[in-house]
Figure 1 (cartoon, rainbow, N blue to C red):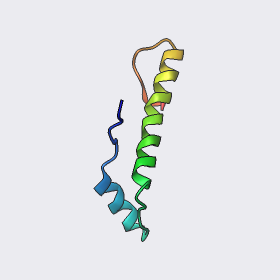
Figure 2 (figure 1 turned 90 degrees about the horizontal axis):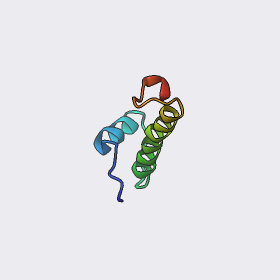
Figure 3 (figure 1 turned 60 degrees about the horizontal axis):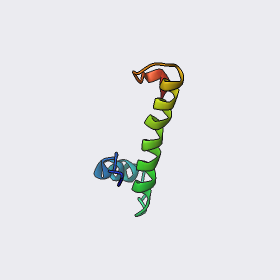
Length: 59
């Protein structure tokens, strides 16, 4: 399965630019991978606690 980007590239680039920095070509893919890992970890925690609803505390 091909992963769809979970970040809005233009917003991320604008934020980084506002900090007087530049965005490399591979930074957005790496950021999206990190974003994917957050809900995956939260899902695992939720399942470990025998719940079916991911809550803020799981993140």
